[in-house]
Image (cartoon, rainbow, N blue to C red; front, side, top):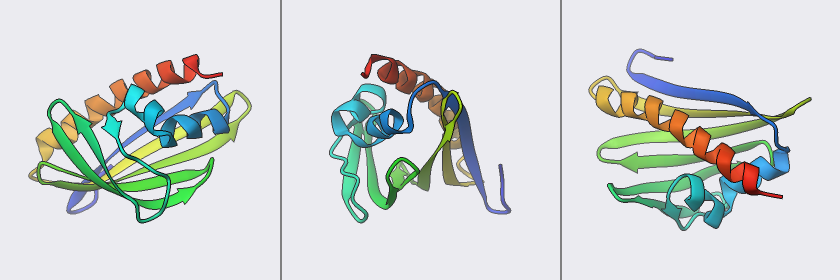
Amino acid sequence: MQTDDTKTVIVEREMAHSLEKVWRALTQGPLIEEWLMKNDFQPIVGHRFDLRGDWGVVDCQVLAVEPNKELSYTWEAMGLKSVVTWTLAATSKGTQLRMEQSGFRQDQQQAYQGAQYGWQKLFGALEGVLQGLS
């Protein structure tokens, strides 16, 4: 997806897990660490947190929290200022999960392509974490 000045990465997947289980994996620090990065996340609007990887740190701030429905936070790293929004919806098989990362400028093609690849990989890791949850 693309607007005149920025691009957006969208990944959607239906997961055979309940809304509550998917929400836990998106909002509980130890679970986030298993599929994304080390963090000090708290699902509180306004909370500033960091995601820490081997390559560096992502500065974030929680923008919206609607339990089992929507989570949104800023994502700032290496010159990229974007917003990640997770949307959850119940389905007959579990949960439809949608991730949208918006704000890639035209001169950030490498970051945009990296995010397209990276989020697909992270969704696989998230699925693995969900498999291990009761």
